[in-house]
Image 1 (cartoon, rainbow, N blue to C red):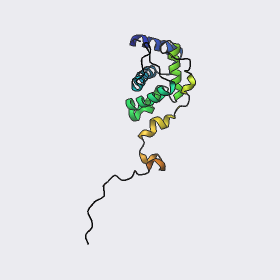
Image 2: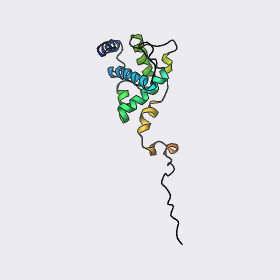
Image 3: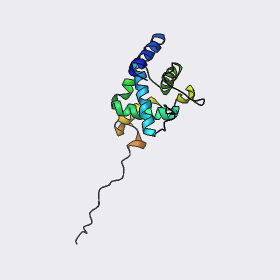
Image 4: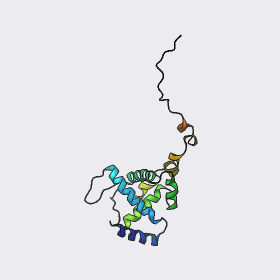
Length: 151
């Protein structure tokens, strides 16, 4: 779909329900493209199908890549605070004819797939703030000296 047409559709969506910022819709579309390419989905006609779980995993990776430590803050500023919000956006775009779906796709596929704090905040915390199981030191990779002590 052409950029202008997509923007027009999203504008109409937001007139009815301004819950999510316009950037959220564009970002989900970009994340879908990213995920399709990453998974090397075969082209079926003119569309590639990505499941809800695949898309959520792709969104997480794409978000971290695009926004780094600001990921959680950016998503929150767009009104996205849980994976269910991605499902709302995707299915709104489906209902608007911008995205397609299969019979097996359900909005519930996006429900509580991962915790936003664990996905978008914890990767950037210092190890000491993550708790004892994560902050354990890795085994030393330093080589031991092969010199023998004299004496």
